[in-house]
Image (cartoon, rainbow, N blue to C red; front, side):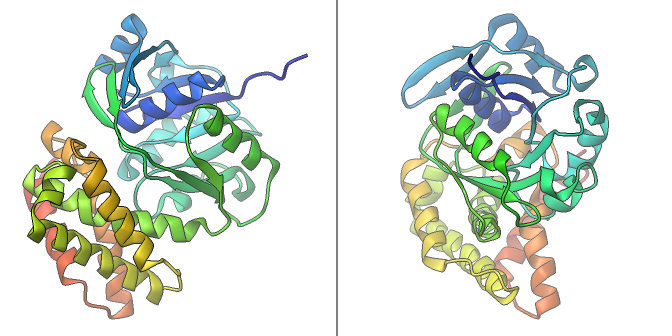
Length: 310
């Protein structure tokens, strides 16, 4: 007798959530995409989800709906909403969370763990990061070009059997995934990466490759990333400066056409996650008395460019 497939709901089926949903479905999980973007949901329902990768194009057929139209409870709720929408999204999806449901955040930025702990006990809240790129090309159509990784662990630091089960689902979908009890380091290193590339792209409308081709822009990206690592280290998080700078260079050299999520938000007229990324770093730096002039300047420019957006 074969085991039942893992039932996974992706809450926030934008570019990243849709890409991950498709990969998990290809690995054998029973995946439902959940989002409030009716146009995207209707396109996926009617035509399947088109996913462009370096290997080619595939069509993933999987259920997609708004939260109110789904009445099942799931083994895993994979949260990919923007940080500023996490609380309201989970509130609207509480009926999907059963007594054994695991909440997993692979979201950008800081502060997601604290929000998820309001909806499940610590042993069922997993936190992590991913460096896979994804772009929303149009309703029902996403792309992901370049490699990446996934790292996650329980929010309370304990080992748990569901860690291996969920990691196996990612691996079955062809995604590089490890369970990592030092995941806070990986999260801060991703914050450094995002503070650098997302903020520059959001202000300049440049792709990652365009940033990499201009030496001055590449230097600025590394300066911001370095400031974030200094703050993380001062806060007791042993983020590795070399690993962060290598990650930035790798993206600049290989994710050439990728438009970071913050740029995608700017182009779509949406609020960005700048305050959960660079803003969170600036606040922590202020507490610690550490100057972060490049990070603070880019945060201000992004806020200025997106002032008044919902």
